[in-house]
Length: 337
Image (cartoon, rainbow, N blue to C red; front, top):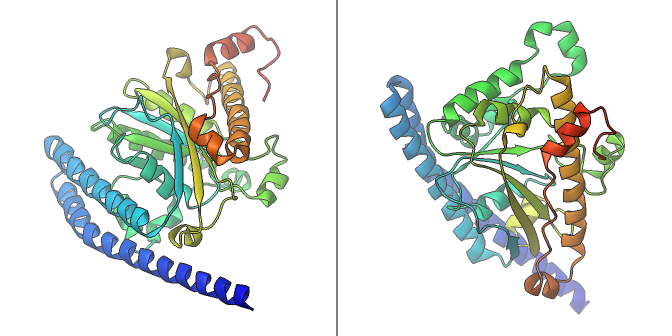
């Protein structure tokens, strides 16, 4: 009986904490969306390049401040243990392409906390439906977040004129991203991991869905001369991925993040959609990267806390695209997935 009463009290305190944190998130959002909307309107009616760069700096500053207050709120009201490896080589004024596994909506505040003021503000590729999220959807639009609309193969067969629409949106976004340092964020799985999706895909990985290589290949091709590094992020939840509500309630006790950086080399830049050999090599490279990430997640979630603190998980050797491309060009056996 006493144990049940304690459990109910603990749950009530947790729910109150969650309501408080969400309220503070909401107030913080209300505070920052007004200057974001006003600046975006000025940028729209005064489309001059020097002014655009100035307005973009204001918009990114507002968004960074919004993330900072949210991070502070989370730190004050929850007791999540953070274990982050690999931030040492990052710079705040460089261009980055960032990729990560995707398990929960919690991944987004995790990435925002991990990279806060360490790299430029993260710009996500969002589903078109998210534009209609009250306040946030319009703020994301004002901040030049690209909104993507994905079509099924059967729909494209009936409407071939829409083929390549996402690539055109990506190309336009990449042009905007060249004016100020930015971190272009992409979840290669394209959707959140669930066991149902994993089974339906017959994924060869234990903790991951199959990656989609086309988006980052196109971004690399469009922005290769501007991007400084390719950042690979692995997020692991030892207690299992939980909901955003669990996160704000303080029920996500332990988050482990491993970051590694790769210089962008000439062989990473190619015509993914028209060069069959390059496409096969790039897909094999991404599969090799994903196989490493799968092993990394297993190590991160299985390692005891003291071991994580004293002996960080070693970072595996990043797969190089050059040898994989040579294998494909020589018609040898492709790099194993």
